[in-house]
Length: 208
Image (cartoon, rainbow, N blue to C red; front, side, top):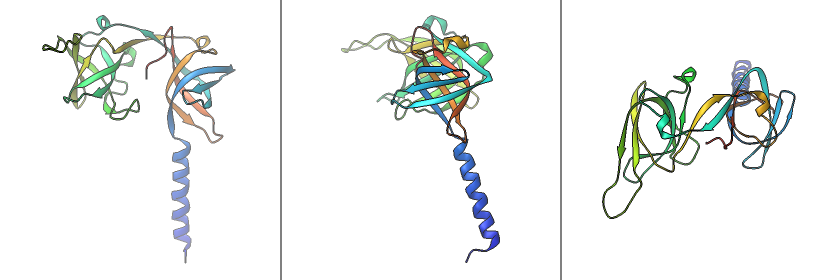
């Protein structure tokens, strides 16, 4: 038989669980369908529609195409990578962050791009050109070492790696057809979402 104390503990645990579920954040990748005031409706890659509210402080950031030449020792970057069969890591994309974002998300962690993918944010310590000799010809590549608070990771950039940079954008760039990536949309009690940052592709679709 339940005691009043046991019921209280159970109720408290249920409320905490509910609150955590309601506060869950999700990543959103998709296309803007419409903008109604401060609410942006995004159609995701899976075809779902999500109403995402912008606050007065929501930052709009443009994602633009960049190049390997823009990555230098000391640059603060984020690299999405997949493991190779030889144990090395290959960059799928590299994000060059502005100085104002230095330290954001620093570290190495699993990522949801694909199974076994990782995201590594940190400061570029070294860059080194490399090539593969032998009977199989492969494009030259560049190995970068990204350092972060508790370690470092060596990641290879190839000709297939998407390299992008971040620039300041305005809200009017969020219009129907715009490609967006939102790293953290927080679920509200009414089922809608709110975000403090939207990345919008400027001439390109934001990488994952």
